[in-house]
Image (cartoon, rainbow, N blue to C red; front, side):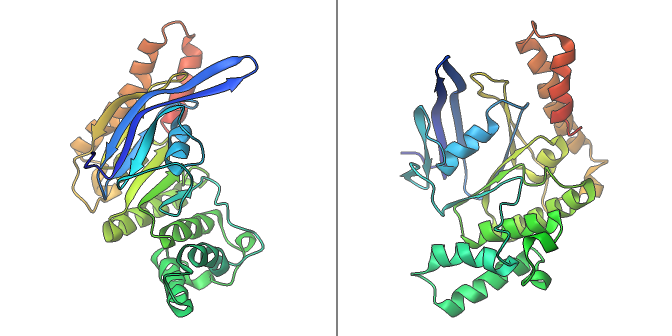
Amino acid sequence: MSHHYLTIENVDKLYHTAGGSTQVLKNVNLKVNKGEYISIIGHSGCGKSTVLNIVAGLTGASSGGVILDGAEVTAPGPERALVFQNHSLLPWLTVYENVALAVDKTFRHSKTRAERQDWILHNLALVNMSHALHKRPDEISGGMKQRVGIARALAMEPKVLLLDEPFGALDALTRAHLQDEVMRIQNELHNTVLMITHDVDEAVLLSDRIVMMTNGPAATIGEVLTIDLPRPRDRIALADNPRYNHYRHEVLRFLYEKQRKLEPLRPRREAQAPAAEAAGA
């Protein structure tokens, strides 16, 4: 029996089409401790989102499986809350109502109506959105929508928070603010987080470990890098920190060099494009 909080064990994923089958993931193994912040990074098409969707229960593994806190994952559930790149708020509901929908569904039997109201307000305060309770999504900025999406996910008290490039659609300044918020919340709540990102700096800044995936098809985990930097972390202070820069270069080295060695037959021009994207270009 695994003592780890979240275990991804021998996961393969094949997609079958009329033209044959494609292996997206091959033998993916990862053990995550409670309270760990894990980033998954790799080129486009390496199956990062597929790993997250299997953990979320949105798609099944072809073989292998996922165990969370002693229970096998077979379907979506509130103990695994997913935040997408695009906020996925319901446009006809207010900020408050969007979070209320998740809270009422998750806690209708365990919290009274007054407790649920307090809990909704508490989670919106956590992401600094108390000022916009009665606004609809089209009345607030992209960064604010993501804050509400994160509040909604946290309000479900998930065992693991799944973030699929949560800051990918935001401008650099908003992105930096939101990364700082997530670090602050993580420091307070000690959530277990699995995040997909293309951004090397984001991965190093936020993570306890960075999982680097090889290129698909049949993608798997190539290397896992432990980020031994004290928390709380300050992006300004870290900019000149030699250890931070060492980790940054390790991830970039993997994304550039490893992939080029794995794919000597690809034209160099093609090999460079996804790597530039992975570096946050």
